[in-house]
Length: 67
Image (tube, rainbow, N blue to C red):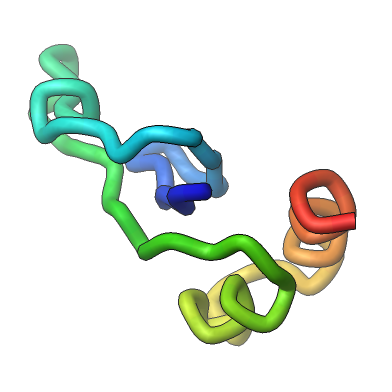
């Protein structure tokens, strides 16, 4: 799955890679950022800098998407 960081905060996943048009927000002019592709907890941990995220948020994200 593809892991994205939302321009509004938080992470989200998709099965297909999104185009720039899908990532761009016309309301504020910002866009979501592709972090990479991950199918396991280990791959996911290599994509993110855990120091930038609240530990509880990352634990819940992993539990939801990788357990």
